[in-house]
Length: 496
Ligand code: GLU
Image 1 (cartoon, rainbow, N blue to C red):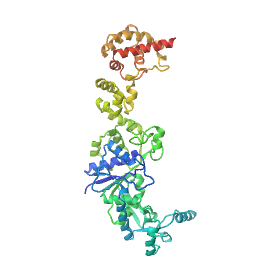
Image 2 (spheres, rainbow, N blue to C red):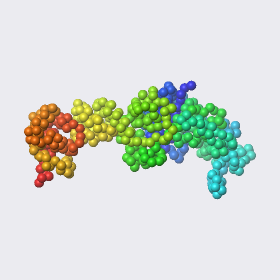
Image 3 (cartoon, helix red, strand yellow):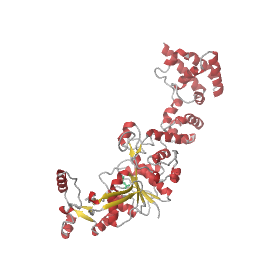
Image 4 (tube, rainbow, N blue to C red):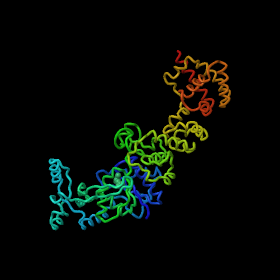
């Protein structure tokens, strides 16, 4: 049997990284088993539909190299892959269930249902439309057949699943084990809504069956729906697929699921790509897709050893879903950044130069110089956005912020910079420059470190940064001398 898995997002906004992780695990499961990875768009809820989100999902999957084998864009033999285009299929299938007595029409008004809910509340009970009370309502089980037929064209109605009472519903999840629920605790769920659209539960089961899905991999939030889905499979007499519910992605601190607000509060993205004006994604923050995928794979999966870096290809061969944990996986942005750092270190200078950020920032340097700059600062990069702060010193003169010379004023900075003028005028070869500085500092009994501090501030404007002599070599003699000149002036101005 061919392995067929699906990622089935609802286009209700941008794709959260939890959804992206679900897509990733589906993709990996398909690849590992030489199977098929399907994208199905679950867009039957008209009220929650958000324009642009389907395109966003498609783009995000492509950016992460998780391209579906079948789907609305890729096509395939089991389409259409948008549920809104499958209305007739659901219609045919719901009629089948009604004919077999597994589902029934219900004409109850909202008022009648509200009243019933209130009455149940008043008695301290939870309202549940089901075997114990369905005969008190207005539905095709209580009305004459003729009357039902008449009402169908005239009044709004829903179609409900007829849940058999006093049964144990047994469902199997490969991560959680066996799940058992009393059928008396499951209500006669609506399968078709009054707008003629199926509910998520119905469409989901029908499509998983018709698309020959062999394994359903989705987020843990759907685990409570599993017994109901089992009942729908049983009502049709269909075999259930394998199920795996992935653990939740938790907030970095405290209880609960990672949310958009956590990201906004703490300053990290929770979406792969930018959404609208305000919500910046992992891509825009300077993540490589390979790094994000690597990090997401580790959110809830453990390879069973210390290895932390996995390319997509390595994951395809390695991932074993028995390594998926039951408990929630805590989101850790610092860890995600660390993984991105590793991927940036493994990229060549040329590759980094070709990124959107690299080419934009360094386009006025010739390639050789740009490559040298990247080589010098590469190990300081955690995000591609760091390229901006790290390369700035090459195209922007330092502004000698207030107080930057304070600690050095007693250490003869003017004398040092005056001498550096001469040394640099003789040449910028790294070794010769270093030796000349060293010899002069010894002769004048000024510690080499102190000399370098004034030198660094003159060139960079602060005490930290990459190797100074290489910076000077890249800047060239005239820019270096100009900065020293400017630094001297700034010290003189301070002394006035
Ligand atoms: N449409 C559901 C969602 O967006 C899919 C759940 C499932 O995979 O069954 O989460």
